[in-house]
Length: 78
Image (tube, rainbow, N blue to C red; front, side, top):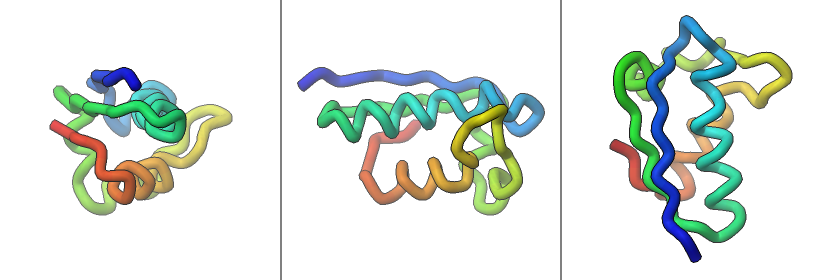
């Protein structure tokens, strides 16, 4: 399978854009691909405990749930 490098730069100030990299990583991992999730700029703050608890993009899975999935699937995150 392929390796996906997914970059995220948006934080809690833009909930929809902050959630999309995590959704892409979750979907790629579910399809059997390797994933590297590269967080930079404001996205780094979403990895801090509790900061994503109330981040929900428009019609998207809450970021808190996606972070839990990323943590359990052992994706490489920088």
